[in-house]
Image (tube, rainbow, N blue to C red; front, top):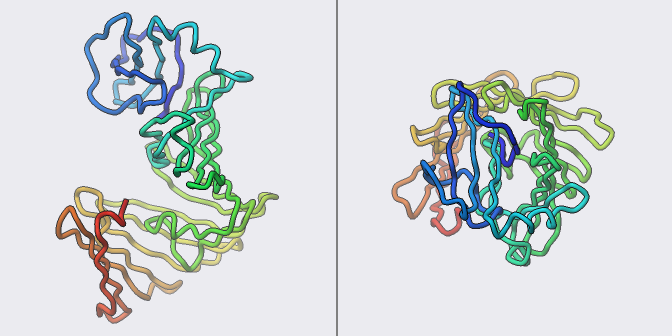
Length: 287
C-alpha cells in the first residue's frame, strides 16, 4: 500500500514483521520473498503489517557503509528516487534505477518527504519531458484516500487506462487534474476531472463485482453520458469491454483473447454483436 513510510518504533503484539534485503535504496523494496533474518552489515527494509495483512510501515535499515552517506543525499528534507515502473492501483514503485540510468528512457521520479512518504511521482518520457505528476495525499496513519494526477499536455484518459475510462468522455487539457477517490479497500471508487481552478468538467463512478468492473460517466451537471462494463479472466486480464449509451443500449464492444504468451488478439464488435475488425498484437508491442 505505502512505500518507505519510515517508522522508528518496534512491532506491537498485533503486528507482523517481515525483512526485505536490498543492495540499493532504489530497488523495489517489497518484491520477492521476505527473510527471517539478515546480517547486520546488510542493508534491508523492515516491514510491519497489521493482522489483516495490510502494510503498516516500512523502516529502512542501512548497511554499515551507508549509515553516514544516506543523510547526505537528502536535500531540504526531501529525497528523489528513480523507477522504471509505477503501479498507481497498488501505489507501488517498481524496478529502481539511478539518476544516470534514468537518462534517455521513460521513467518515474518519486519525491519523498522527511518522513519517507512519497509526495509526488513525476513521469518523464525518453526525451526527458515531464508529461504528468501524481500528487499523493496521506492521512495521519499513512493511508491515502485521494490523489491527483496533474497533466501538462493534451491527453486522453481512455488511452492511459481503457478499463476505467471511455473515449466518449476522457479529454484532458494542460493543467487539468484527474482526482482519484479511493475506498477503504484501496480500490478506486471514482475520478473527477477538474481544470487548474478546480472547476469540475466531468466525473466517473465505479462499482465492482466478481471479475467485473462497471463504469458510469457524467458531465459536471450530473447528466449521465454513458457507461461500460469490463469483464476479466481469473488472472485479472480483461476479456471484454462493452460500451452503452445513456439509455443503457449497447453501442459497441472490444474483446481480448490471449492464445499464447506471445500475442494478444483484439476484436472490435458492433452493436449487433458482429466482429468488424480483428488485430493480433505481438508480445513486444504490449510492453
